[in-house]
Amino acid sequence: MKYVLMFAGSVDEQEAWEKMPESTRAAGYERVNQWFEEHSRAGRITGGAELQGPSSATTVRIKNGKAVVTDGPFIEAKEIIGGFAVVEVKDLDEALEMAKTWPGGGIVEVRPVVDHSEG
Amino acid sequence: MRVLGDFALAEEVVQDSLVAALETWPEQGIPDKPGAWLMTTARRRAIDILRRDTRYREKLALLERFTLTPEPAEADDRLRLIFTCCHPALSQEAQVALTLRAVVGFTTAEIGSAFLVAEATVAQRIVRAKRKIVDAHIPYRVPEGDELAGRLDGVLSVLYLMFNEGYLSRGAQIAMRRDLADDALWLTRLVATLMPDQPEVLGLLALMRLNLARSEARFDASGEMILLPDQDRSLWDHAAIADGTATLERAGAMRASGPYQVQAAIAALHAEAASWAETDWHQIVILYDTLVRMADSPVVRLNRAVALGHFAGPEVALGEVNDLAISLSGYHLFHSTRAELLDQVGEPVLAREARRRALDLCQNPAERSLLERKLRA
Image (tube, rainbow over all chains, first blue to last red; front, side):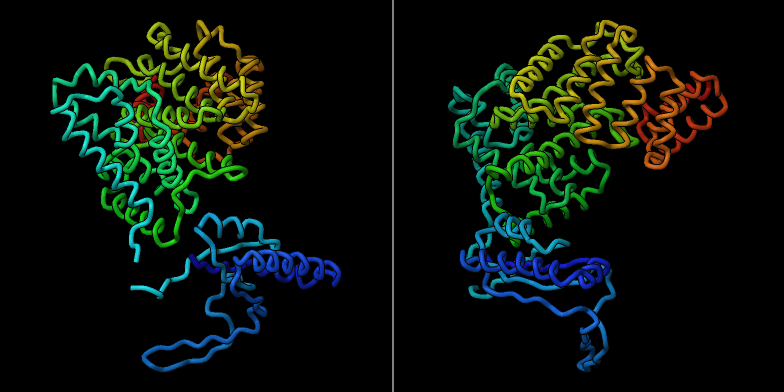
């Protein structure tokens, strides 16, 4: 069963993180990398990425066949998505266990992926 | 492609075994271990249908007492069903509805009337929850190891919620839903039978048993509510109290205390007091202190303040209660407690005001009537 783990946090947390000293940030990345490596080695992670901040986002809205391009994320939210991982596990409990050990803090949303392989 | 998850399958199995029971019992008679049958069937359905047939009256009494040990395989199935229904990935409303539907056998109409929501809403909640179980692949299993404690808490809070709604309804229709409280007790006893090594399950079971033991004394013949100080203690079910206390002692022997055990201990102290005046308030305050440490909440603090007032005086209690004004301003029992204390310190005008506020916030007919009587006095 495939799930996407979406890693999110508040704008405040993001800003605080960016202001942290380089050594603290490096240690944080180290823990996140370890988490990714450990789960990839166990075959539970099939993909994922860290995203640049919402100020780098561009939104394309398609309405009546016309595409309108605007600056910024698609919703102005207090929480922003910082990255994601695509995981392949037995069931929701296993995905939740992974999410609970996410070293990045903040919020993790777990969503099952639609399976188009059959039927 | 597999469309149905294990949960749907389990539910089907439950229904099938019920149908099988109802087809075979009239011909072959009730099996030697009818409880084992009921372990895999929805309790209410089975009992309702059996009730229609007078031949089964005696057997029914046996079934309702339910003192049998389930077969291990069936026990596992039933536990898995309960843990799946109470999975934290489902909303608590859905957990309650699903448990009542799939494990106890309530109809959606019954769930709606017990929790003051439209039947269509309940039906929708159940459909959505089942869809999520399938779509998100919520496993049909009993969690193990480190995971168990947290998940068991979730199951217990669903049972506790059911019980509380039955014991003292929030709604305007009826003061107490004995059937719902009894079903919550039955479910808790079932979980206790299936997980005999969990002290908090026994703690919750003891708490329910001790509270229900006072049922006969809680309302008078015309349905008016009688509060604890004024209850006729000879009407209490002393066998149930002894049983509840014994259950609590069994939990205590496991040496892992928790909030349900502490609440049961408080209920036991009330149940064992020969009169209101002889209640061991010191011990009760100590237990509330423990509860504050384990599971702090404004409601726990409110109850603690009341107990404290019995030996430290109403002024002290009132001070503590007033501190909770912000967090409990929407809770009718905060205002009625304040009213009682204000009366005791000689502030009848303020007491009246607080009582009116309580009345505005309260829907339960028996509680309303009690407040109205006091306002007229």
